Amino acid sequence: MSEFFLHGFNTLGHGLIGYVIPFLFVLTIVVFFHELGHFLIARWAGVKVLTFSLGFGPELVGFNDRRGTRWKISAVPLGGYVKFLGDDTEASTPSAEALASMTDEERAASFHHKKVGPRAAIVVAGPLANFILAALIFAGMALYFGKPSQIARVDGVQPDSVAAASGFKVGDVVISIDGSAIESFADMQRIVGTHAGSALVFSVKRDGEVITLQATPALQDRKDAFGNTHRMGVLGIQYNAQPGEPNSIPVGVPEALKIGVEQVWYIISNTLRFVGSLFVGAGNSGEVGGVLRIAQLSGQAASMGFQFLVQICAVLSVSIGLLNLFPVPLLDGGHLLFYAVEAVRGRPLSERAQEMGFRIGLGLVLMLMVFATYNDILHLTAS
Picture 1 (cartoon, rainbow, N blue to C red):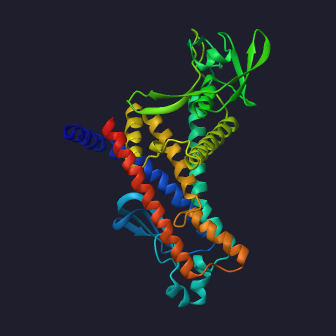
Picture 2 (picture 1 turned 120 degrees about the vertical axis):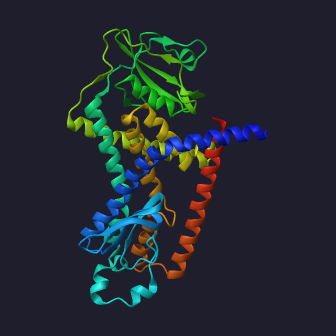
Picture 3 (picture 1 turned 180 degrees about the vertical axis):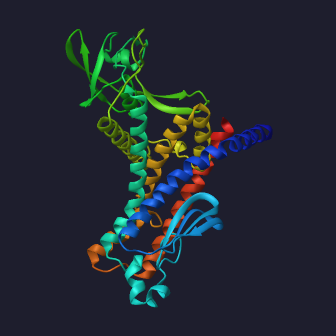
């Protein structure tokens, strides 16, 4: 048993060394755009920005811009922050002492003296910047590579599969699932893969007529090229590209942007569905990953090519943006929750209530980090 764990951790160590640069590349881009969203809207709202930091802890290198903002790179590259005038910590908690002693000029530039609307706009700008970054990356990939063109044609049905039991036949073409149009086999795979155990209604074109079939994708474990196991829904349908059949078709800028937005919404909706399944006990908590798994995926994507690394960057950008919108004190969503309460009450929560909220939020975030890291270690040592 001890030899197994020693081998696992040796593998983990060698893997991390190879994944550090891709991981830092991906995380730095995502964090930079997140904080840039906060920064730009703060400047627009007339808030003085004291610090723009990539990373936490001691400063490694930095400079001051002409407006007095300190731009710096810090020693711990696992996030970043923007600190405003009046903030007591990197989490933008207010400093009561500093706020009370401000001059009128300082109050005009203080984040905490702004009305609820501007403060909420500054906070939500970070996650929104993440969504915009991801949409632009996906749109750029669609412009460069085109969109999948293989129609959702059934070229084979595996015996004793869900597809066989549901009445699918060779030659069928799936045109919609639950009312959503299917333009390619990849579209069908994406929906089926994320709806294991859910009954889906398929509109299928067969011999010139449209018929309706119902199927519930079965949950199966599938391994990718790197040996990572993914749990997904499958029907048992095969597609075989025909000679001369194009894999993709070119798209223009408007359609590429539409594809980018759709990809972002697809990730958001499936993430929320997964979180909901965890709350009702139907989801697999082992799929919750943290920093180590992100590093692993970044390294694996980099080994496949730059385009795959950029794609991981887009997916992570959406995930971080969405996570920050969860109504947990310490995250952006927690600030928005406090502002919503303030808007209803007509005055902010007491300093004591906010402090307790941030402590609870810190505890929840730390618990999530520990749980995700535990899952990562189990996953990586088993690889």
